[in-house]
Length: 338
Image 1 (tube, rainbow, N blue to C red):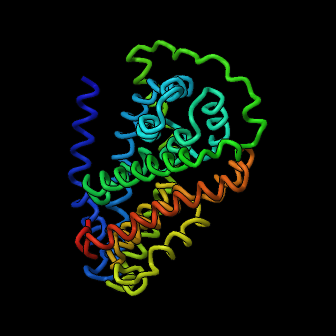
Image 2: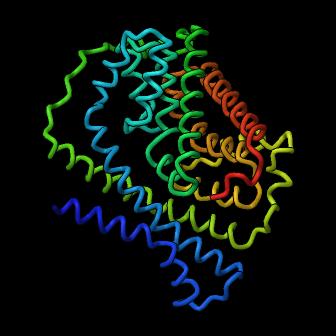
Image 3: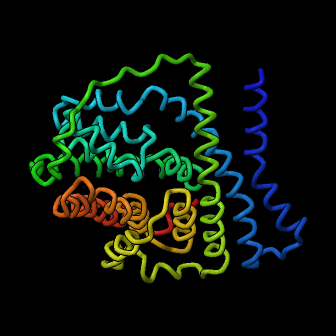
């Protein structure tokens, strides 16, 4: 009963956010319609609660799903798989498992010592930070389910193909030798949990994840609100448009040092699209920021030689460039405004 009441309250609030934001901007604050400040404030007051409300629901659901995927169970699912099947399964597991670049080294060691092929391991390491519940819920909330699925599909394709290519290159000798010297150890069975335990784990995930990312959400939406209110319509099309051939590689180069998470970058992406930037260019920028981080490269250097890190970044970069050019080619600028 309590759950039904909570869901009803959630739906009631969510469906009236637009009216509330407009009343607050034009009524309570008395800002003049059509001014840059009014546009920025309405954007901010609408998007912040919308994204946070979506985030709570999705993180709760994913938190429950994650109780079925401990690190031990994930390793056991991937160990011994044929590479083609393993790449697909690893990329899909990366979407629902609670791992990010900060856990790259222990995950890499655990996977390799459990017998997971190198290419399959990389498919997981690419998908886990690139396609996560935060990225998907923000994209869904800001652009709709079509763009969220588009991002997930292209991200999965990059993870699967890049991992498969790395596996075909047979670069195991480019892993630091000490990694293979570590005993694999047994695969541990996951603890048997009741549904009450899993629900509690979901709410714990809400507290941990939403509690950690909400400042980035607010900051990212604030930056997006500034772009939304003051950057002239079409201004960004001159250097982030689909007809500028160098825009996609420039966006990738710009995104690598700008390490951020999905919560901080996606609201900025929304504002860039509204002002005329091409979808492919913006997707490439976002993927580079989330999936090609310098901190991750530094962390992985503990277990990988520099040559293998460069191959890893090179293959993923090539995939991101292909995504950027493909969507700039097939989707006109301005078609996908929220």
